[in-house]
Length: 187
Image (cartoon, rainbow, N blue to C red):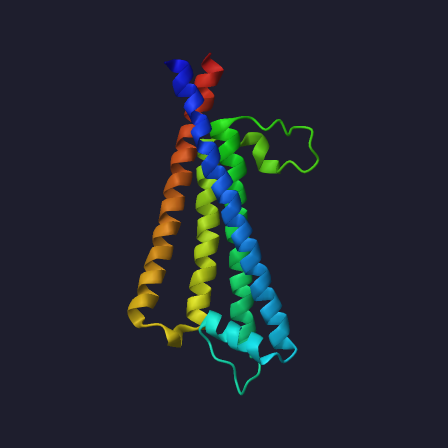
């Protein structure tokens, strides 16, 4: 029975493969938005219409505005940050919960992977979620006239909840780390 329970960790493998496929979708989305931004910068009316619809902010007299560019770029940054979050979950989760990747001698091994555990992964994920939430909040505030006051307050409240949650996770991790280190030193 213990061997079966331990082997059940491999049931997570399809989940990580699914996240890799989701990341591929984000890559395609990123390139579509980037191509449309470049096309709009060169005067392509269809590309301009697509990005103004995408960001929910209109173009001024059929031209690309600084605000529209900023909203599209923030959207691109958001995609990159979500992709980074996916990599942390895929690589860190696989390494922590499924199987070692044996990347110690690989020149491209992420620095954080050498000391990843469930606790470190939680703090890193919380920090990444705060970054993503910050980008969303900034996009909302830049285009605030498109949102109701209720939505603005709700997004701000959600962002603050993320901040408080991350601080609580980090505090718990900090409180537990000396105790764990002390326990190891005692043995």
